[in-house]
Image (cartoon, rainbow, N blue to C red; front, side):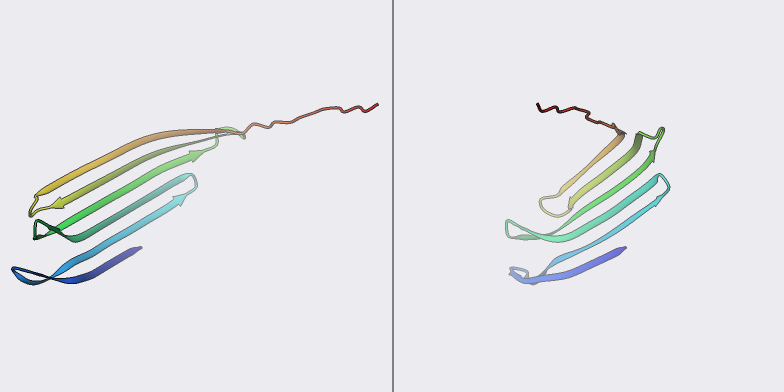
Length: 127
């Protein structure tokens, strides 16, 4: 699925004359599964305008994510899954204040489920 979104915000009057404020973004998502294997991925970006110290500047945010996992059932009561997840984020303001940031996170996960059958047996005698 691909979802574009473009918008021009209100007009701003500055010493350079009238300027429009940028506000646009795109995004995509993909997900698939087959038997015990799963895959998910997404991407989003946003382009906007900042107004700092009476200066207009473009600002760009981007975020990417993917997850791949596998589930299996070794016994009738025991289930386990493995997953690898990665996320990447960036912020870029090339004009004033000239900020560039990037971060990422990676996670490897192993999850176990064990189904317990619990019961209660009792005898109630009233005399």
